[in-house]
Image (cartoon, rainbow, N blue to C red; front, side, top):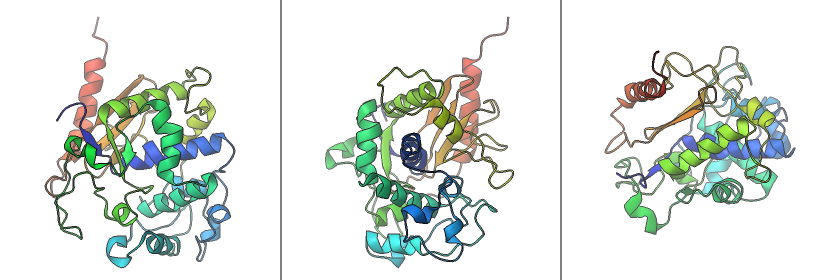
Length: 311
């Protein structure tokens, strides 16, 4: 492993990619947080779905199931999306938190409808390229293979060691480009992203610096929404709770997320720091869950190391 090693970010895709796209569109007035999803995506149909808003999707409170077996229930991207869009709600919108890949897949379609282009192309044009994140993309090319950390020996449906292929089965059925997973990146690239987001939140961006998102828009996305009451979720992002992968020493204004493959990112604007942890804990199998203890321990060690010495 070197600083140039590229990792499957898994669910960090939801925040680095999908949530950032939503921030941009909300800032530009092209996406309404409290607008019904069906306004953008009429295919999202079924009982009570007319009440689901973009805010519900971003807070995992839409009432959708956590996931569906897309990889063995469908054979094409179109069929998989139709399966997701017509999946019934399990709860009324806004009353129950269920961390849902389906919400991210629905929201990805909304972004694509609003922008008129695939999610990967929009993110490349508006986020990745402007920030100079040269090791970040969906569906890495074969020339990157030697730099990519392998994930799991897939026994579900691909039956091979995955290197440079998205680990998440649903994202794989969607061709490797999805709102819930599929983004690959390196620690230096994520450091660039984290620096931009902390600067943007603090209003430190110079005129013309892209991506351009107002600090007020970012503040709304990073605020606990209390949907449903008591949830630690902001919009897309999570905030510290106990127990949490954020550890015990970040401030109440911190925000972050984790990824199934063993990735995590936490940022604390009060302390002006970010903590990026990239591992492939699913290699060779997903049975090892010790990452659950590693993440908070690393976060606490980082804060301790940067703390001003006692005088």
